[in-house]
Length: 222
Image (cartoon, rainbow, N blue to C red; front, side, top):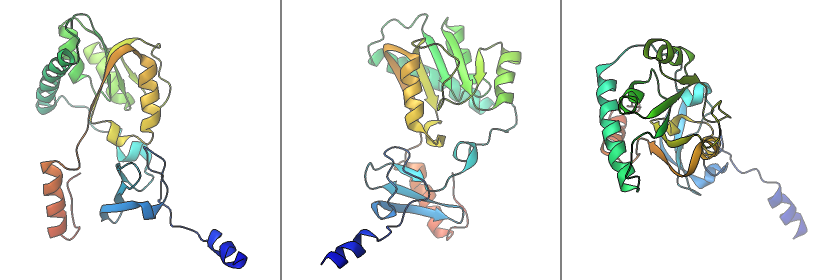
């Protein structure tokens, strides 16, 4: 019996290539495969149910920081819509007076979203992984945008913002826990963190999986 126990304790369970970014689970047996491509698997953690990429990729999980600097009308239109929706959600959250709020937009690019609240008298700042995009926002749009990642300590003082927005950012981060801690440091007590991220159960993802299966893995929307 002792020999059997000793053998069982030495078994090596299969591990994920990277821990679950939310709970740290490393057991492959406790994850379900959503789908896979030659470069990586997409797994759903059986402990916390987070869906994540099972592959350590540089550049914040594949987010290209060297994209071209362009003023895109589609991005501008989305920024206007996002700001309108943000104001509606803040009112629902109990912030009746929206004048003069201090806002930080994480992953702000060239600052398209920041222009709307700035025009309405908000004090705005941005954090952007791309140094080139941050420089464009500062030099061309006169915005307070710093280059860096929310996953580490940022140059902004503690409790300096009423609202932090992260549109399409959290899914790219290697350390969402570190980002949450930094946001907690930057927000004033009782204020608001707004996250917008793709849902794995949404219509586009269902179409994505259908096309992926029909094409036998040759392509997929990301």
